[in-house]
Amino acid sequence: MPEAKKPDNVVFNPETQKYDAALKPYATSVGAPVITTPDTITWKNRSINKVNHKVAAKYQELKKEYDKMMEEFEYNKLIFNAKFNFEPIIGVVYHLYNRENGESFLSIISPTECNFISLGSFYLNVDQIWEKI
Image (cartoon, rainbow, N blue to C red; front, side, top):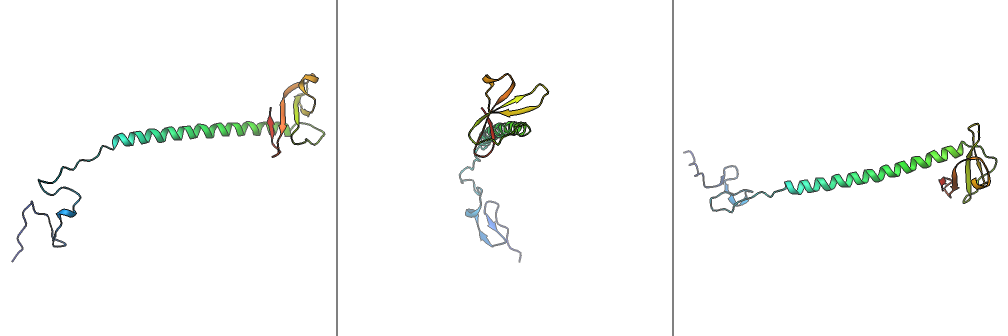
């Protein structure tokens, strides 16, 4: 004899042969409390906005650091390609000049004491990297 079908308002699981209304993640009767979904759109929009600002700020920070590093690289390249007949001492300020023929050279003579075309003053730090003053 076929098993009688349960009414629609009875929650019966035929696979487990149990009444499992209490285990369902949704309301199963008219008297059950109303299930409302939380509004996550506002939270998502706020979070997306925060992440976008954080990424943009980090990008600007990295770009600024990269630009500084490239400027430091260019100064060091310029100095290492310049002519000088001495070994620079760490912690001493040196001055970079251009000759009339376009050749650059490094000197200990300050720009106020000579008439050469000055490209700037530089300081050799402990890491053997030239820093512009």
